[in-house]
Image (tube, rainbow, N blue to C red; front, side, top):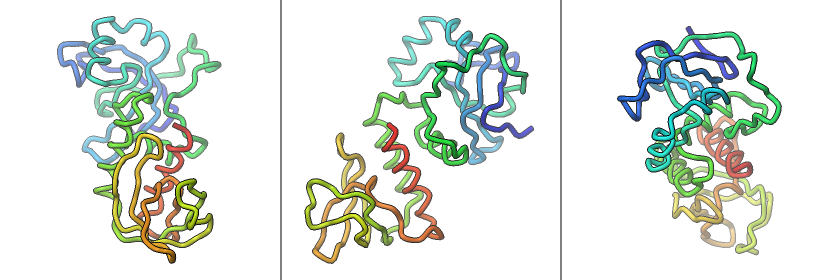
Length: 217
């Protein structure tokens, strides 16, 4: 069965937490917020229901925090879950999805697959996860358009064309910094302020997804 974002699921019997193998999660319920076919079988990212979260043992919450994991969400194989009807006592009001980046479910799923397993407040670790993702999914060099002026680079303006040559560093304030070639010279510039020139370029979606995450982090 192929699950889709928004489906309510229940964990099957005899399934344990993949991070803490001695902890049974059989019967836990939640909503699918991400789907990935990168593995066989495919995996889903699940946000646990309020009732399930209220029943998670304190020991698991503590161990999750120590390991830098988000106990409110989990990635599981589709073989470990079953589809159920919506949960009657689960109110949608005020139940904000911590990993909700807009109305595009495909984009939302792609972003979640990059940052899964990391708490939304741990921005530094999420940035390094993006950096690892880009090492595999970005092909350098590529042409890009400046979408927003950067206060540290007065010679570069919105709408300018640049060539992106490599990733430089991860900065706490400005995110991933890349090397660019501009008509006025070579600069270090925030990737979040760039958009790949052509939508047909395979770099377009990864860079766009990152910019959307950065704007909503």
